[in-house]
Length: 246
Image 1 (cartoon, one colour):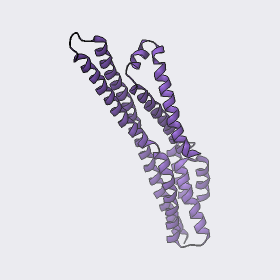
Image 2 (cartoon, one colour):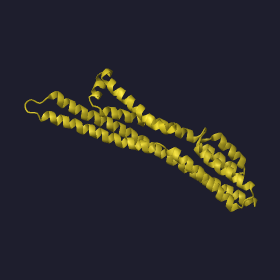
Image 3 (spheres, one colour):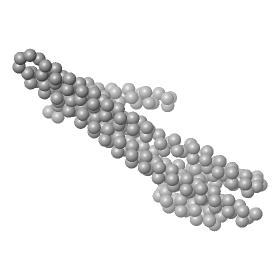
Image 4 (tube, one colour):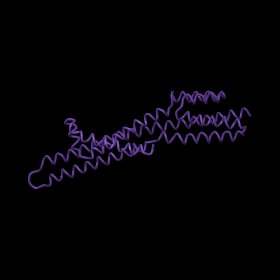
């Protein structure tokens, strides 16, 4: 069922954008002026709707990935418990926090406890713990980076569609100027209006998409850095604890 969500989302966005474009003339002078931008305005509206949906989805996903509490406080709590050898306390803290970082660290800690109960050597305990952390991290990172490429693609496409609308509008303007006799002022105005409206719409969507993409990439990179640092320190503390007890 999930494989049909994306096509259905595009179809729904297209239907909404076409409906809004057809209703623009009824929304006053501003709506009528935007409507003069031509059919490409509907495409720009669809891109803006999709872009807004992706931004909202990323905000909610990154908030969920952070967990219930402050991420730095959680990492400090795990660090303190591992310093004292309280692995069970660290696991419980991960279960309370949830989120991507908690899932990665918890996977390593649980694997550490499992292998240690089996009486494995220190080298195997460390390698198994690292493997569990890497596997969990490999599952969490794609969730953090999901739809970022879509945001970047929409920003690029918006610029191209706005430019296409500009070119079409200028073609109409020059066509109005090319007629012999008096210049058709109405056709000239329609062409210029179409060019400027599509340019403005394309730039608006592109600027919003680029800003959102850069903000989310920065947050994801920071999140990944904290996860990697916390995971590495957890492995080192567990390795030292295992060595001390042996």
